[in-house]
Amino acid sequence: MPSSAPPRRAVRAFAAALTLLTSVSVLAGCGKSEPGSTADGRAVLRYQGATGQVSPYELAEDLGYFNKIALRWEGDTTSGPANIQAAATNQVEFGSAFNGAVVKLIAGGAKVTSVLSSYGSDEQSFTGYFVRDDSGINSARDLIGKKVAVNTLGAHHEFITREWLHQQGLSEKEIKQVELTVVPPANTEDAIRKGQIDVGALGSVFRETAVQRGGLHALYTDTALYGALNYGTYVFRNDYIAKNPEAVKDFVQGTARATRWLQLTPRDEVLARFTSIIEKRGRNENTGLVKYWRSSGLPTPGGVVAEKELQIWIDWLVRNGELKDGQLQAKDLFTNKDNPYANGTFTPQSGPTGEAVAAK
Image (tube, rainbow, N blue to C red; front, side):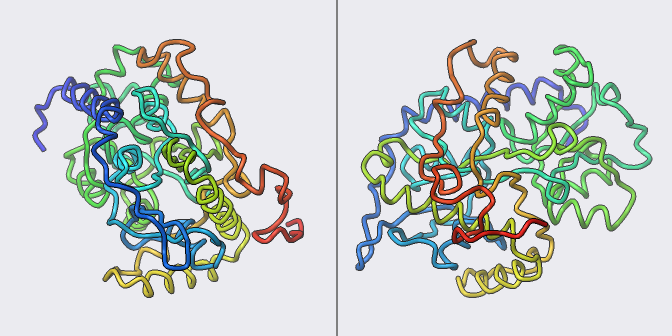
């Protein structure tokens, strides 16, 4: 990773990522046909997973919360933007990504709708942006001319970094002098320690193991920036929603209930269930990552989407000249109509089967 790379490289890469997303509407006709149904009449939903991890919808299937759908794994995703692009181009039925990436995808012409929150940040589950203890970096201004590692451009880590720099008082000209560099999460800690990068985004297992080894600390975190917040959503293509409303409804209600199960179930029980699911699905995975699970990260019961969670990023993109003022309205990009914790089926205070939950 040569140190002479100019800051404009990050700008070019970001533009390329944006071009990739905004070309989705052109590519939409290149996807596969829908996978049909199972022998017992359940609609098959293709999806992309994550090695060694269990998503709420995989948990929902294991808990028996789906009645009308069956999941089919199509491989593992490389990033949120790639995952929702796969959904928009009919490679899979649904995908999950950072809400800023969802907004950009829709702004680029993709006909998708957010139906449920997919991940978030709280005091236990968050991303920290780490520096070496001896780096001499103590403030946003210290990052001018420095390298910040993110997992992919145009997604969560980039938005948080640029917003933090803005809130810390840097001008747009100064922010552009902070170089964003793509580094795989598995390599980020090592790159920080070797001085190949100055700041690196670390979450989950990568954050916890780095902290255990010492010598690094977080300069800023997403939770410190916005508090507990839903950061991503699941999206479906609008044409799929129109043709298969019952399948989408079943996905949302089951995944919302599984999310609620995660929010209320003791951690040891969650870890045991995750380990069982990984072992049963037979993908030759290591269950070692399971022990680093801390919480669902979703602060709203059942992953109900709030308008502000998309509007924040619309406003951000308008401020940065990537959207026109009034081009998109957050209320038009999502729906909570199938979420039992939003549509009156269950109260927000109830459990995964609608049962009353004792106050903690």
